[in-house]
Image 1: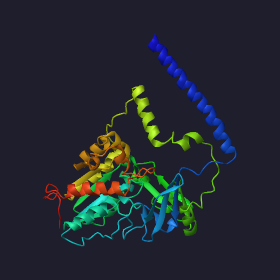
Image 2 (image 1 turned 90 degrees about the vertical axis):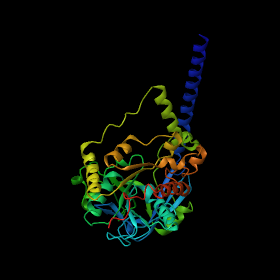
Image 3 (image 1 turned 135 degrees about the vertical axis):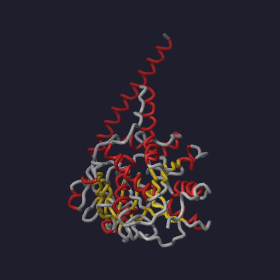
Image 4 (image 1 turned 45 degrees about the horizontal axis):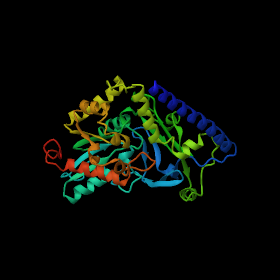
Length: 399
């Protein structure tokens, strides 16, 4: 009975604390909302004249022109990073121009498909460039063709491979998919900045390529404003200095919770885990891809088999997966099996790091890794490519 009494007292105290907090939160937040005294939004994206750079493309989803435009991420009023959108000769985020014919017959040429972690134009140097530089220092003839599309995944990879690489007869020696959580669930992603004041983005709600937009007019039917303010150079500089902020209508939000970090991403993760454990909720296990998505993967597999190309599936872990020491997601494992690919677990690049050291590999608020995290991952990938097992007859020039 004494134990039960303690539990009741605890529950009552918890309930009373939450009740008075909610009342106080409601009063304070409503007052600040009415007086328009809220601080700026937590996350802000600024893009400098990006209409000259980010343009819809029916094959890539969108292409990057060679005209550079800067972008910045501001979190809690502080600039987390400033990057530059710029495309190469083929409209992709590669620092080097590349073309279908092989420029150097001695080089091993690998086509890499990834998302923002591989495009990574918010960094000084992405992991692909870092691997190429390391290979050059070791006199290893390696070229990585960066076909990554920021914000995209499986559907865009299929489109680029079957509608660009294949028909234009790119001479490649292997294929690498750098897969971040959720990439394999992403349908065809499109974007457009010309004539807009905001980042316009969409994922077409279908795995059927026949349903994807082929013209800009068709793409406009799907495009939605996804934050991101397209600014003049003058206002972009002011935004970086904190002298410009969007003139948005105030919206009500729980001020104490947002400003104190109670509603921070880490808190949600902890609460979610606690709820799952308390109520014995289990995450449904992955079974298989639906037919239309499976067909795209099978076409990728047929392309690699027909051309005798080795395939690598590299798992790019999220910060939370690293902190929880999670194994590769089931869909990534299944994806690799369907492609008869070598599965490389990128989380091994961060083995031995404690919680604070892992967090130091990522931006504080943005979900991406920082330069340190990207470089650590690049060093790991280079060690894989630098092993004798990798440079055998299964991976080498095919001309």
